Amino acid sequence: MKKTLKAFLLAAVWMAGTTAMAQNSQAQEVMETLRHVNHYFMSRYSDPTVPTNVRKVRSSNLWTRAVYYEGLMALYEIDKDSRYIDYTDRWADFHQWTPRNGVTICNADDQCCSQTYIDRYFQSGGKEKIAKTIENLNYQMKTGNVKKANGALYGWWTWIDAIQMAMPVYAGIYKITGERRYMDHAMKMYYWSRDTLAGGLFNEKEGLWWRDADFVPPYKTPDGKNCYWSRGNGWVYAALVRCMNMLSPKDKYYQQLKKDFLLMSKALKACQRPEDGTWNPSLVSYADYGGKELTGTSLFVYGMAWGIRQGFLKAADYKPVCDRAWEAMKACVQKDGFLGWVQGTGKEPKDGQPLAVDKMPDFEDYGTGCFLLGGAEYYKLISQ
Image (cartoon, rainbow, N blue to C red; front, side):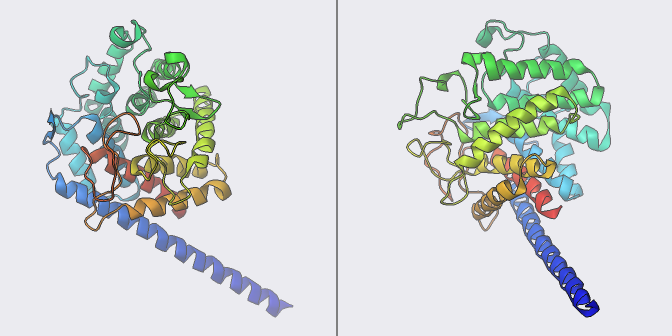
């Protein structure tokens, strides 16, 4: 009896060790893939201060580049390489830790870079990193949107991408200052977009978002379905995660955002492509530019892997979704680290088409940022 028990225990230890080795090997593969993709980007754009020049010159703290730095900060969480910080600080110092186009702007795209300024504040302190961001939010909180929302004080997020670009900025400043007015204002803007704009951009029944007022019913895809843009829904999904990370789980706003997160998670799980583990640019329609797309896929992995880690999503149901999606993401990485199947800038499934594994999008920086966000969160999941 004792020999049998001893043999059983030894077998159990061996199996546990074998499983741990397999997990470590998989996690290391994920890490190497993330490093490879990021090395390609940092080598290609070795000077982070240089403006972009796609159709026109834009400063390098525009939203597309700001999303890259969100991903780089996620990579730094799991890979403490000082080169990432040196690169980031050179960029932020050059832009004087200021929202794009100054402090008297209310465009969420221009505020996105402040997410990284806030991350760097959490990492190393320094009030100069967030002073201009606070000044900017204080300006917006007393300024109505005259051009697009009939002067509504909370009517600034007229497209769902804006929720990702700006809402985590408010959440971060709330966490730093403890001043509730920042989170109160952000939630009022969120609910204006969610429930008021064009009758509400969130279809709570289906758990997905219309991109803006142009896409609410009666607008339909060619097959008569609702048009839900993949990356747009990915932006919101990521924003929910990034904001909840700044809040106490006991906070009423955390609970409200969690409710939407769970609705979206269920809907997104049902939309994953059975062919390859990615998501269509048009989530529920193959007739309207169905096919693999990397940015939405990466953002959905980011959210689902986080949800599993928090215990909100059942691992048995959602980890296979993440596993398949990661394999698909990895298949988009080319030998030099270039990412294929990235939809270019736009606002709907048809933009930037056709996609291909070797097609260069108009901007590749946000695609890298999305990939790093999703991959880093997946790494945490398989490492825990």
